[in-house]
Length: 40
Image (tube, rainbow, N blue to C red; front, side):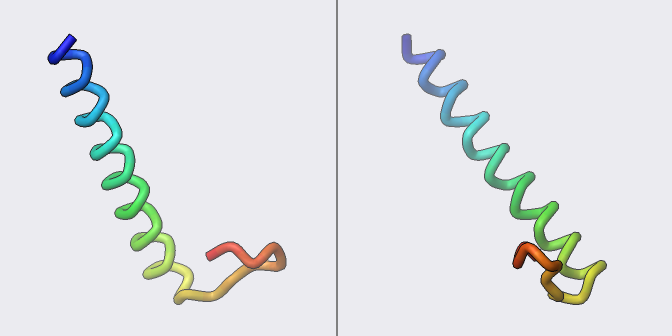
């Protein structure tokens, strides 16, 4: 049970980290401009 909880926490952290990195990379490439839908 403990291992399962640790794995879930690990994946949650990695997903958040990867999403943040992807967002920063996108913003760096696009120049922080939004598209017609308002997304960065």
